Figure (cartoon, rainbow, N blue to C red):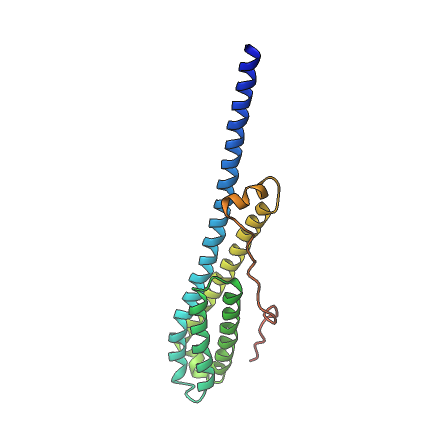
Length: 190
C-alpha cells in the first residue's frame, strides 16, 4: 500500500511541477511579447512627436523661403505619412514613413542653409534643437524595440519556451530596419 502512495505522491508532484513550468513559460513569453508591443508604441510616440514639430518648423521657414513650396509640400506629405504609419501595425510601413520624413527634413534644412537670417532666428534654432532631441529619442526607441524583439525571438525559438509559444499565442516579430539607402549618413554642406 505504501508503494502506491509513494507513486501517487510522485505523480502529483510531477503534475504540480509541470503546471508550474507551463505557467512560468506562458508568463515569460507573454511578458516578452507585451514588452515588444510596448516598445513599438514608443517608436509611434516619437514619430508622432516629430510630426507634431514639423508644422512649427514649416511655418518658421515659410516666411523666408516662400518660393520653395515644393520642399515645404514634401515635408507636409511626409508628416501625413508619419501620422498614418503611427497607427499602422506594420513595422515596414513605419520605417518607410520614417525614411520619407528624414529625406524631406534634409531637403528643408538644405533650403534653410540658403537663408542666413533664418538660421540665426531663435525659433528656428529652438525647433532644430527639438528635432535633434526627437531624432535621438527616436533612435533610442528603435533600438529599444529591436532589443525587445531580440529577447522575444530568442524565447520563441529556443527550448523549452518554443513549446509554450503557440499556447501563449506569441510569435516571433520582425525587427525595425532602416529602408534601403538610409544606412548612410546624410551629407551636409556649408
